[in-house]
Image 1 (cartoon, rainbow, N blue to C red):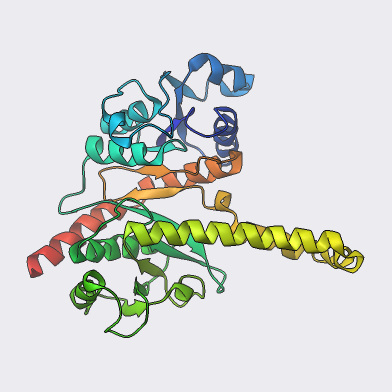
Image 2 (image 1 turned 30 degrees about the vertical axis):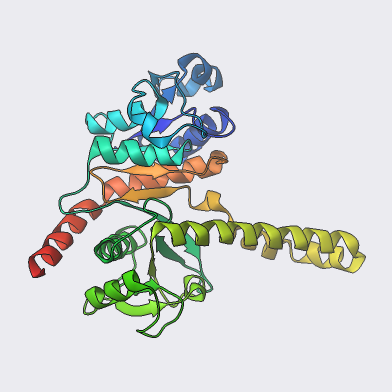
Length: 331
């Protein structure tokens, strides 16, 4: 069984949704959870039947969102540091935190180390598409400035993530630019385009619309662009939901239509709800670290745990190392 260390205190709403999410996950899957945080608070939230199923590691220091990410390396008693350390020490297979994302990425990268040959790890997220499947987008925030060789490695990460976790055979890989033509993009993407030519599945440059139309399985970009895409998408989804609710309230006919289309709205919400995904894995490190949304509800935590279990159960890290070694030999 996979052993997953979970930062119980880092989310915006304290330990309650995290503990509840852990319990939901235990009801559906067999794994060993280790909750890291204030033992007294965690125990007060655990039903009697689960107190012997969940281990607790005491940690009372919580890294605040206003704290510098690099400070986390000095705060060895923090929930994030201790959760990562459990993975480093071999006591856990993976870790999850809905706390300070920058701190989680920094501590995971520095304490666990990068996979052999990996220049920089990348943060992956999954986006909804018109073809009833999800596309893989990376990097979405780990690296603001990138070189061509970083984007090439991100393509490898996304390729094997799509294969191993989404079960997509021969994923199509695109480089996100401002046009499909080879001449489009900046100097970094143009150089990466040349380096990726001949890579299995590489289809060239793609545009923002290809993230959602299902034409492309893996979309590669730097962390600055990827994070903008992710936050903009979340904002658009929220705005559309707001307008739908406002228009329905203003029209009796719309209210009737909404009642008839409840199932459709439910399915739409499922597609754009971040809780369905759970979190964003930091790929390229030795081990598994899942960065969850600060506003994660129990469902999001449950799915983040499932994501971590699936990640550690695959051979994705070994495959990435092998492929990176092959590319380095060609160079």
